Every structure is written in C-alpha cells, then in structure tokens.
Amino acid sequence: MSCVTSNAPRTPKPRPETSLVHCGRESDRQFGFVNTPPYRGSTVVHRTLAKLDAATRANPQTGEFIYGLLGTPNSRELEGLLAALDGGEGAVVVQTGLAAVHIALAAHLSHGDHVLMVDTAYGPTRRLCDAVLSRMGVRTTYYDPHIGSAIGELIEPNTKVVYMESPGSLTFEIQDVRAISAAARARGVLTVVDSTWAPALYCRPLELGADFVVRALTKYEGGSSDLLLGAVIARTRDSIRPVKGYADDLGSLAHPEDCVLCLRGMRSLSIRLQHHQVGALHIAKWLQSRPEVKSVFYPALESDASHALWKRDFTGATGLFAFELHNASRERIACMLDGMRYFRMGYSWGGYESLIIFAEEGSGRTASRWRASGPLLRVHIGLEHVEDLIADLADGLARIA
Ligand SMILES: Cc1ncc(COP(=O)(O)O)c(C=O)c1O
Image (cartoon, rainbow, N blue to C red; front, side):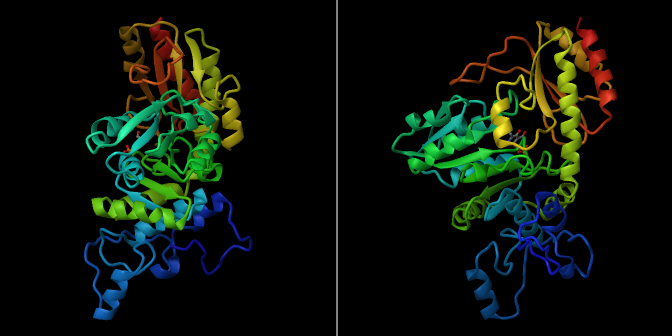
C-alpha cells in the first residue's frame, strides 16, 4: 500500500517519525476515520468472472484482494509502513517473529543447501536449524558473531544464506553487517539480519547491504506485550516475491486484528524508544558503579566491546541489555528476583513494562566463547520512572549479599 497520501509532504521522503504517523493508513478510504478497522474475513466476493480472473492473476501484494489468507487491507498497510521505514521495496507480515525467521530462511533453501548461522542467534532460531531444517536436508554451520569479512572463508558452493542477528538478544554482540553482507554478496549468497533489538528508527540493515530484515514486531513495534507478530522486509520488489509465495503456501499471514494493534503501537514507537533508551543508558551506567556488578553489556556504553560498531551503524539503543554479577549462587539470585517490585520475570521484551531474567548463557554456543564467567541477568527497561527502577534494582542487589 502506497505511503503517499493526497496531502503528501513536500519533501519526497518523509523522516521515519513522520512515516510512523502518516504511512499505513488511508483515512479517505475509511469514511474519514483516522484508523483503519480490522477487516476480519476469509471470502472476498467479485461481481464478474473477468474481475475474479483479474484479481487472481494480479500481484498478491498490490492487486485486488482475493482471499483473507493472502492479504487484507490491514496486512498491506502494515507491510507498507514497515517497508518504508526500512527503506525496502516490500514486506510480508506473518503470525509471529519466529515464523518470520523460518520464512526468511526456508523461502531460499532446498534439500542439500547450507546455511551460515550466527552463534548468538535467538534460541528458537537455533532450534529451527538443528531440529527442523536439518530434517529437510539443510545443513547449518554456526559462526562467531565477530567474524566480519572472514565469513567468506566459510562459504561453501551450496551456501545459500548467511543469517545474522545484531545484536544478539542475550549478550549484545553487534555484527559487522556491512562486511558480512559485502563478502556474501561477492559470492552470490543472500543475507538476512534479525534486527529485532533495534527497530528501523535505530538501524536499517538493508542500507548496510543486507538483502532481508527480520523483525519480531511482538517486541517494540507492538509495544504492549499483547500480540505476536513478525515481518520479513526485502531490499527489492523481486526478492519479496518468493518470501510472500512461501508465506502464503504455509498459510501464515498475520491476523488483521494483530496488524491493527501493531500499527497502533507503531504510531508512538519513536517516543517510546527514546524513553526506553534514556532509562536504559542511565541504569546501565548506574549498574557499572555497583560493587555487585562485574560488567554491563549494552552497546551504547563506551566501555562495551561493540560500541564502535554500534556508533557506526545505529542511531539509537533500546531498553534491553544484560549485566554480569560477581559470583552469586542461584539461591541468592532467586532472593533478588523473587522480591522485585517492578521488574517481573518474563521471556519477552519491548513492552512498556520492565522485565528481568536470569540468563544461563554460553552452553548453547558451538563456534564462539562467551567471555563472562559470572551469572548473567538480562533486563528490559520499561517506561516506569527511572528512579523507581533503580530503587528496585538497588534493593534486589542488596538481597544477594
Ligand atoms: C531476537 C528475536 N528474534 C525473534 C524472536 C521471535 O519472536 P516471536 O516471539 O514473535 O516469535 C524473538 C523473541 O523473543 C527474539 O528475541
């Protein structure tokens, strides 16, 4: 769906904050109502055989609607906004972030193919490779997130995809997407980047050279922990077609109500991200000053090993980071976590609420070493007042002693 409305802005390309407000909705088509309501529906009826034939032959992302499984006004509006924000020419929205990971990979893979997967990938992405793609005859090699252009040395004649996740969502290593994408492209291999930690306002991997971006919209785009949704965004119009075709063959189109909720969340994304960022940086620095804390892993900190790459490729940092404690037993950590007032334990992030988890990192890796030795806690800094969160963490750390 086009992002250019009848009162189009004078500059040819609106800034992302403006796109967030104006793209992905056409009030003129909704009797003037600002937001498009959910188009719940399976069947789409046509008056004549010629019209049905034309709709069936049309591009499923731009032509007339023909069946709810293949696209609704809501999915198209969200896809249009996502593509505009990432600077891509097409997007597909699907039911979950993990479905987006699966589709971005499997749309390009056949029996006998090979994938290069970052060692710090989200756990279920790794399981997808080890438990699902392997059964389909696709082999995976894991690589060190810091590999850079040396990825070229791992590319085999049957390598079809290099998959990145930057930063990893547990230990926050930023990958050199430019170098990896250039090396892969030189050998005719596609690149996919899971950029869920940094929405397009803060990082646009297509501009760094990647072919596809995966986003779990479940996190910051949705913003309220009340939906599951994912997207694949493509650099070119041609390259989104096989992705859309594969998603349709699986029957995985996003539900219209979830698209509406996500669009609603995205209207306020830029101010929410700013708040997450300011709070997270403040708390990360405060944690660095605490005697119980050995290190803090947050790319926006100057001391972070990924800081230089973050500064080069990102325009902001979000609310998710981790910190390592000096030695503490599981029982003492339980004392801390069980008594938190505002931080609750939960496996997601990106909502308005603060979260904390005890992350047992390192054991799953096969191609790199996790450098920390103490217990790792991952926090998501929500939209609460930062001083209340600091007080909660200070009390918690005191319970470890
Ligand atoms: C980095 C990353 N990618 C993808 C996903 C999958 O998203 P979803 O939970 O919507 O399937 C997650 C979920 O935690 C994630 O952290």
